[in-house]
Image (cartoon, rainbow, N blue to C red; front, side, top):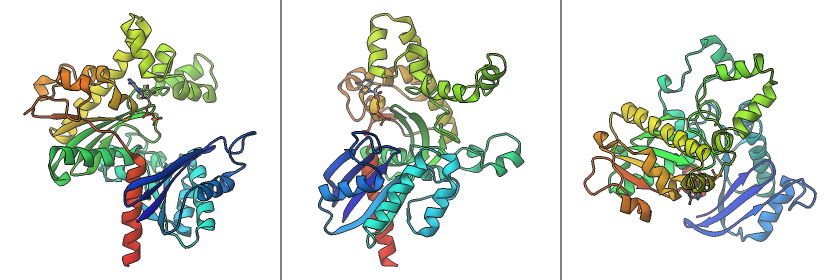
Length: 372
Ligand code: ADP
């Protein structure tokens, strides 16, 4: 089946066309609505996409949608009710959901006979039990304001956990995997039998691991203190914790390659940033080993996870007593399995492919609809 995958951001549209699972075209329309940009609005951007690829025989369009709230536990064929529900979730994802909605609206208009499928970043984590998504805050406030853990990067964690089971030659249904998505954004996930049972991002992508520019976990009192004692306005605190924190905040640079180079040269700030980053990953691995009651594999993915032997080695250093070791030669070569043969816990490196997973889910959901 031919599937078009669209990832609509506020000022860009990324697209990839799959035919029978293979990529046959891809591209990026950038700086939408900006002077000199590729398109004046999303409508023009999508018309551009459709002019540049051969859509004859298109079976479905898959849309990446960031926030599915508590409503969507799986990918869904888009109808008016789905659009309305995604609109209602805009307060939870004020930058991302409106962009996806405009992509969906334009695609429905231009391709009225093709099923449109929404694939949510949060959906995979809807299987986490209540004890793993409930914050211990005033229950009335939480219910009224939809305050809970949702988790993100779900498409990537789902894909990587399945690929890991395949790599180990085991059925997904009885495999326990800790997946570590370490890119610009970063999150950890505990996956049991192909279902998410814990994840590090929360109500927003802000919590959990240290990221390129986001802090990950901090005591909420940091915010009160910066507001009351330092006198910073809330907007500025938000900017600081989301754009000027993480590696950027600690060492003035959000690129792990630069951090590593400076660390090799003996730079103290870069060394601390690297150590804080890797220690946080290790803490989550320990937590998720406990949540899962032991794991078959720990898998690294995304920019840092796929490309940094130093981060992989440091994050899992000293865990031999828990069955986790990294073989230095395999790690340096970037093998798919970097633990020694026969290790109790396999350590894997699996390239993520969110678009391929969106295409797979889109095909599954839209052909399911056709059968009905
Ligand atoms: P995004 O989350 O935007 O999709 P990626 O998954 O591509 O990002 O990850 C981007 C990050 O990967 C970069 O910021 C960079 O720090 C890191 N990275 C890429 N290559 C390497 C490398 N060889 N060594 C260490 N880090 C790397």
